Image (tube, rainbow, N blue to C red; front, side, top):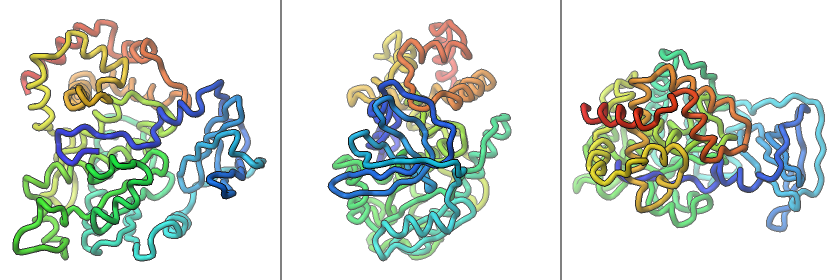
Length: 394
């Protein structure tokens, strides 16, 4: 994911579309029983996995969600044995989740908990506290924004997890396991599979270090001073962007089990991305114009294809292609901004429809367009003209 405000966000290695591809063949609905118990053999070792069945493929492959929120994609040839019972699924408690995650992390990782987050860190405690306060303010701003628009969201089932490493080197030891070498160019990401944010102490990033201070932030005032600099804005925006993904997928606005259009998930994350570091409470900048994305979109309009909007809605290709991704991310933000401001009711209904989709059943291009047209109208050319006029006035 990006280290600058104009860099596209790289999808995490285990995305909904990748899981869909793995389990696509003749999916069955989730069964009615409570808990599934699977012994799987992976990399020569047996593992015991317990959780709720999200979906089962005709060939016996399964997608299982554990009480800690981890998504297990299990192929039929990995299953040693399995059984189920009628015990109801129950998400892990905060203490159980902390204990489970701590067991898989380096011994020097401490934990800082807030009302809704558990932050595991091996950097300074003040930086972990700064992250926790930032996440909590975003949490309040996110829920307040949608509640004012009569969107019914639910609280996360488990505390939201963030891993904050002391430096890029220790961060990469974790991140490479999920992202490979792509991790070297990004400062943080959200994993759909583990449901965690992973990042590192931004006060130690080279371009933010002053000649007088060569160590990571030691108190909240010092941290805020560093991360309030203009050159830090895109780095902080990235962390907010990833936390917004986490909130979208844990509040019911979007689903980790659904292959949502990429323009939608990324556009919404960018919509909340603009930092508000000047207050200790609240989040005044939710929905503020993202000047970096707006400038990028305006520069791209002269070469924009006439059917660019249709292509964006119908396929993720523009966002995934290195040649078009930066412009497509800017347009995804602008489209979400426009729809939330000009067509809020219709867009809310579209979002509710997205949230109710069946797990792992991807829409083809025509289905994606039909789903959008159902709520925003059939005249996409007219909508595109209105959209561009609106953006031109910002």
